[in-house]
Length: 250
Image (cartoon, one colour):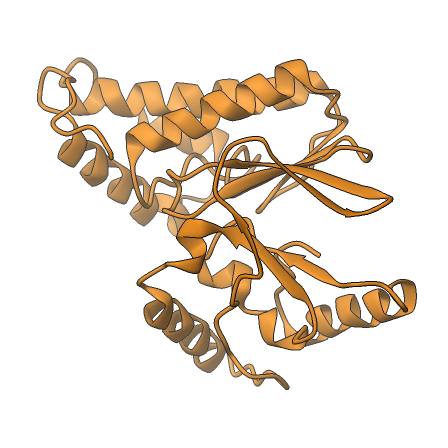
């Protein structure tokens, strides 16, 4: 299981399915990252072993993230029949291309992908030729940079390489629709780079950001404008007016 969510009935439907096909097997629950909308189903699977990054295991903001879960539930009158708890990590991913063999049918390779947030990873299910990327390469979201612009670029470069050299048949983002053709995966990479380049040009003072282009491609301005402005502020913190790094990430 990966990032099971969102509403209680949906999460319980996932649990019932796993109970049906997973009898006599170990259960594993992999988290691509710790954003609240990716961990809010965790309490429904207390017997599952958790796979996540070392940064996830050491995340100092866990109470704030759990508070976001509770706040979303309160705002939407949702009562979950399980506790809202932080996933304690059993299997730690701490390096790129880390290989995990969960059973005879499931072999995973994992890469660290901080940038969107601080503790992300992408996962290649090798036999299934499926690449799960968390909150990257969405067809309904431009890059959401909630942690670091430079690391976001690094994450895209890793995804670019994996998509190029591995037999990836399905790309699964955290939001939006899967991609089933390499050409579609490459198009999503290209659009992400176009956004990052436009952001850099804007912050460096070379070219004003083309908002009309952005909202024509991603027609959810009412929901996403605040994130776009956050991206601009973050880029301003990382670049000077000549487009040079003010401080490289650790």
